[in-house]
Image (tube, rainbow, N blue to C red):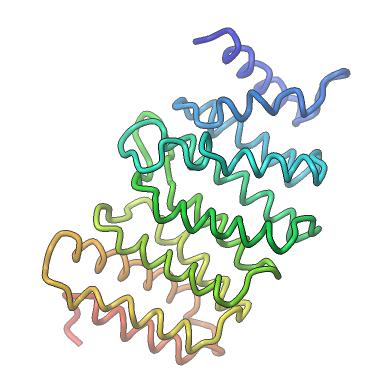
Length: 281
């Protein structure tokens, strides 16, 4: 363990103990380069228990970063050394850098929604970046016994939940987000077992709750999830069917009591029945 890394851990543990307040002469900017350097550390204590909470407190709770600092931080988090670090690789430690770069992106977008500082082009570019990330990310593991959470799908979903609520997001972009969700559900390699389907459901639940898209467009998209049932039976087809079935169940039990969406509820139930090969109805 390097002296720099050890010192960072000790400093962050001390700052956490002091309720995220800094000592005299310390500035949040002084810690940022090391937070970014070790953002994907394979040890969960540093990555998940110390670095991410620091971003959470300083971005969301305490507003320590200026708008210019947040804009620069966003540029770093979305670059090839962070969100796209070794993108496409599977079953190695690079996933932690990618997925834990996504979490502070969600915090920055949330900050923008409350006090806008990013322009139309910047939000559109960020949506494009996240859509690219969802297409190119191949390591879809959830919880790992030693390294802790990878959760690339869930952390990306957290960003999309914030982005779809931005005024700058067009109807066409929201449609592209639905396509990206379908792509994750029909990923061909991984059945979600660590509640990634719940985090994906957050996106569509938000769209439905805030009526960001028409009921018809969402209903058509939900119905299309069952198209995988028409494909030749294969492992890829089973993955698509099971992920889509579990996703719809998650979404239905969020929305089932909403009288505004009776038609959507019917579509969800009908589509789930098609996806469920054990259904006797």
